[in-house]
Image 1 (cartoon, rainbow, N blue to C red):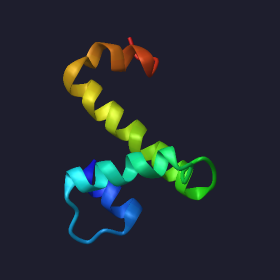
Image 2 (image 1 turned 180 degrees about the vertical axis):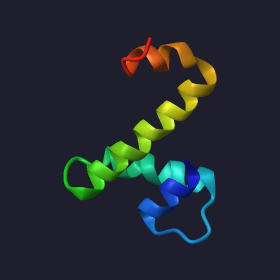
Image 3 (image 1 turned 90 degrees about the vertical axis):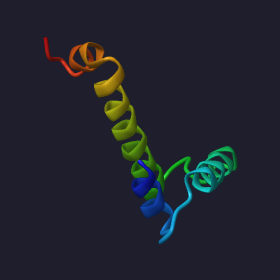
Image 4 (image 1 turned 45 degrees about the horizontal axis):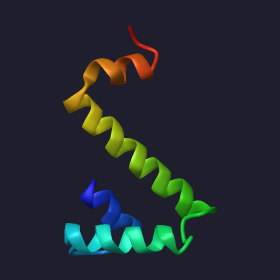
Length: 68
């Protein structure tokens, strides 16, 4: 998660709060509306969601990915 965001911004020494604020500003400014960076951000966010669901609600994750 943090390392993924750090790679998105090419940040060698990331601080979670700083990257989160920067990401929020950039999303509001439309910097991820389309293009390669948009696809990269989408994959980072989806990966984070899957990771959180695997911990918090693995049954929902399995059902949403077509597993029963």
